[in-house]
Amino acid sequence: MPSEPKTTIPGLREIKAAGGKVRMVTAYDFSQARLVDATEIELILVGDSMGNVVLGYPSTIPVTMEEILHHTKAVVRGASRTPVISDLPFLSYQVGPEEAVRNAGACLKAGASGVKLEGGASFVPTVSRLVQAGIPVMGHLGLTPQRALEMGGYKVQGRSEEDARRILDDACELQEAGAFALLLECVPASLAAAVSATLRIPTIGIGAGPACDGQVLVFHDLLGLSPGPRPKFVKSYLNGWELAGEALGHFAREVAEGVYPGEEHSYGGSGKPAKR
Ligand code: KIV
Image (cartoon, rainbow, N blue to C red):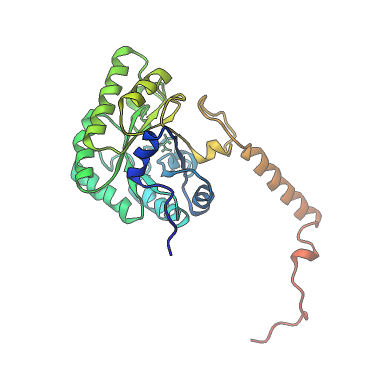
């Protein structure tokens, strides 16, 4: 029998209404998903950050629909209790709402419970069309890495009054278009607080201060799996890079010295080839 999900898409709004926090972590494969699934974390995001942390691309721009679908399927197999959100990659939703429906629909067919897309007011018709098709959509405002070229780099957004006003307006429009949650990346904490207080849907922050209704981190950042440096907003709960490096070095030394494998890792037998 399939296990009970930790929450549902409508359930996220109830968490906000009850004053709780929505916790989300990215995952890109079966074993990472199993790790997250065994915790209380409510949501998994198959982020296009896979371009940086898994596929070794210089940005998220090269990530394709095929890659998102491949990783979504692996994550879904490991996440029996945790709803999975697929990130729509660059050029999978920008060309038009119909293409967005086809690509987002493919994510749902792969087992995702919803999709995330970057952008404000100009994507409202796309968000409406997806919601009309029964596809839950998470918005993403502030620093939107798929637009890093246009933004002149990975910079905090919404620092001027005009930019802050635009982000607040975009947030309201996305909510009215039917988005079920809004990710806020790299915006001043005061702006994230204002957006969170204005919206009925939960805001999920990353580099957006403590007043958001939830928080997301990239799996590799949370576990310290890269050599660094890491952005200011990241808190690593494990020094995974150092610990994994030590373990790999330990293995290499023991094999070279003949310590591993030992008797206890070896099979006994008659020494004769087994009969078929
Ligand atoms: O792709 C991603 O990992 C993201 C982060 C902001 C969580 O969108």
